[in-house]
Length: 313
Ligand SMILES: [Zn+2]
Image 1 (cartoon, protein in one colour):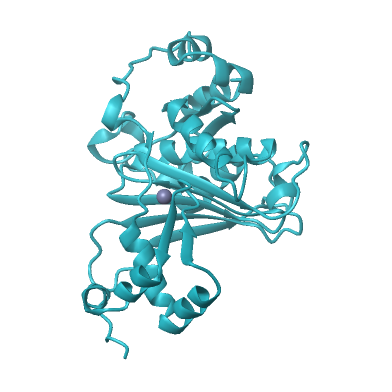
Image 2: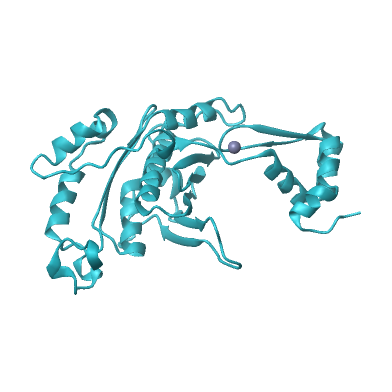
């Protein structure tokens, strides 16, 4: 599977750059987040999960959080929280894993949860089995897929100011009617990890793809260069509303509910110091403002009913 995001990615960067409270991303943060965006789009498209896929890195360095959220229709949004300075030459570990306390989490949050159902979440550290710090998002996610999904995965990721791109190669579990190699049916999938010669050959070819090639070449050329000796069948590329694109799910109503959850005292305390309660969306940069009248309305019956809580007096 190949993804090449241009408009979607530049839209995310443009919104960040025009957010006066944050400003544009430092370059290493931009490239890290772009690789995460490409990877998350690939993973959601690959598993076709009926719910949101959220890829997060909780950092122990200047990047405290990097998050990408991809909906089943591949609408996506992303943001990073940066505290302090990120050097232009910063490596992945210098941004998010200075003391080996950084974590990567993948959450699958179903759209239609049955009562009490929790989202599925897998968490891995940012070091490998020998405690070496992982320096590439692709390596981190390959490690994750092998540990949690028991799947051989090869990822090549790259991002710059105009493109976020990725190539994902995965060996599908050899089970059931979809199995392409009859002799494998009876074997456990796990037994084949790292051993399947076809997967290994394709994976090695895929890994030879250079960052620069992934950023600059079109998909047709990439596939021809990498797999010129293989027989390739291409699926129709996703376009328009079926392709990955930027969309933010924030709303004034949600922000209102968040203010209600702070409580009336807290809301009034903010309003005693300033004219508005102002909440900015980290993902799209929209600023929501609630003045004293708006806030008073939040704490009256209709919203309380929505919230299901008692009306405070
Ligand atoms: Zn938003």
